[in-house]
Image 1 (cartoon, helix red, strand yellow):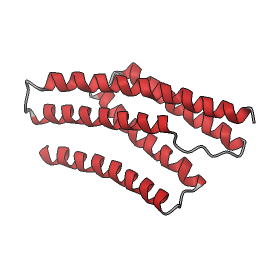
Image 2 (cartoon, helix red, strand yellow):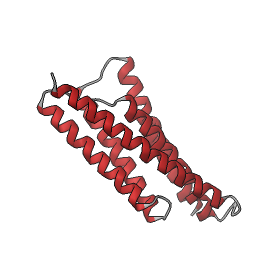
Image 3 (tube, one colour):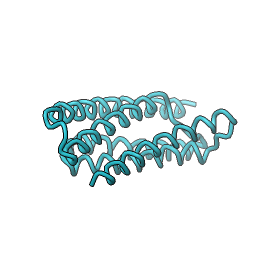
Image 4 (tube, helix red, strand yellow):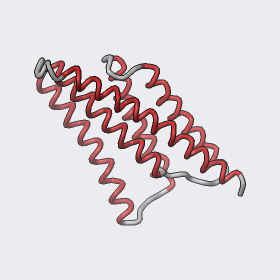
Length: 161
């Protein structure tokens, strides 16, 4: 069991670091592409939604908040498709990056809680970590909704052009 938890942490950290380094390299070498602007957020979303669903099943992430995140992500995909019809490729916006940081933070705290429970260690700390995870999930949903309206606003600005 311990090796599975260690492996899960390695996979989660590697996924986030490779995503970050890929973006940094693309910007540094000026090798951004329309495909990358669309595929990178799509891949990030698949990873985040998968992790969040696991936390819902584990009882850490409230299902109704997960649905808000899921609907936001589908909404963003829809907005990106509408923009593509106009010949505009929308990459990640600052609000989306802030949302992603809160997603990563919430997932890390939830993974910490799940690890503590499965390893049966620091029982006195577990309730506080779970409350922290739920609070940060709530914060991430708040930023998720804010970023949705930011993307919607950007779309509407292309509508007026």
